[in-house]
Image (cartoon, rainbow, N blue to C red; front, side):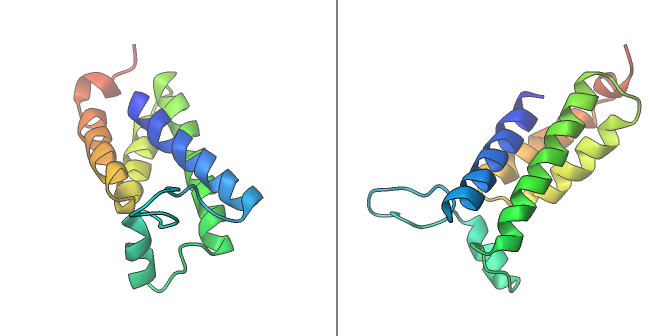
Length: 118
């Protein structure tokens, strides 16, 4: 749940920041000042503008769904682990931290002890 909150919380914050201010949070000092993370290169390669309105809205929507699924999972809602698993898989593109953290979420959610209702 901690990883879901960190990933989803950051993406929600960053997406809302981008919608309200016009851009995602970026470093303010050299050598990466004003540059987005490695995930932006993946989106560009897929033909998407990483700073476009659809991407900003997708950040907020994905993060909201991920956090909601995480809350349902923590509350032991039957089948919520499937939503967390799917959303963690969908977040593997979020290089570099999101990829590593979401792989950890996938591994943890697949642990049978965590899927069994209390």
